[in-house]
Amino acid sequence: GAGVSQTPSNKVTEKGKYVELRCDPISGHTALYWYRQSLGQGPEFLIYFQGTGAADDSGLPNDRFFAVRPEGSVSTLKIQRTERGDSAVYLCASSLMVGGRDEQFFGPGTRLTVL
Amino acid sequence: AQSVTQLDSHVSVSEGTPVLLRCNYSSSYSPSLFWYVQHPNKGLQLLLKYTSAATLVKGINGFEAEFKKSETSFHLTKPSAHMSDAAEYFCVVSDRNGNEKLTFGTGTRLTIIP
Image (cartoon, chains in turn orange, green):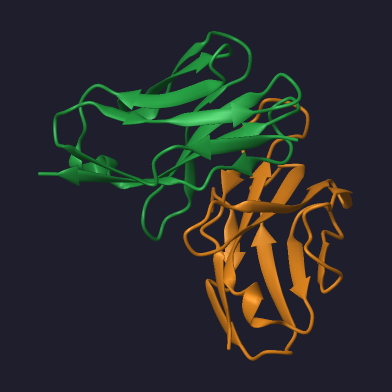
């Protein structure tokens, strides 16, 4: 598995439910990013991690959204009390380090549908 | 603040003819600029990047882009379109050293006519 993987690939939930989306970055990549892509739009930045810490979470839309990366590898994006407007494709990316000129490698995304 | 504007939401060209996808950027700092491609049901793939070295950047699959500071533009070109080029293309800017949060344009859908 050389690339970024995300699970599940599709998630359908009901309004008000809690969901977790998982991202496995490329092994050895210290930087991890989450983006959200709504239909017909470009991806929008949510949060990025350098190691275990969230270096910039300015893109999280509100306090229903939270992300963790406890061991500096796998990350989980958590959404509480989901709303229909949260429906989108959630993309994860990783890069070798922050502050360099390394490419961000993107995963295939998780398509979240809130009914 | 940083932003990009992709001037065309949809471009159609005939196979074998040149491709031009237009992008203008706005950035408070010296920007890093990228073009990413997204094929249906596939992840985003980096085509090329500009990070303050040569202003004419060559990427994969015959694509290239030229950074023009005076015009704040970073247009993507290819001399001869191939059917496999049909996809969504995103122009992207980063304000820092090119590896923190990326700001994406709204995308240009490229259709290739046989």
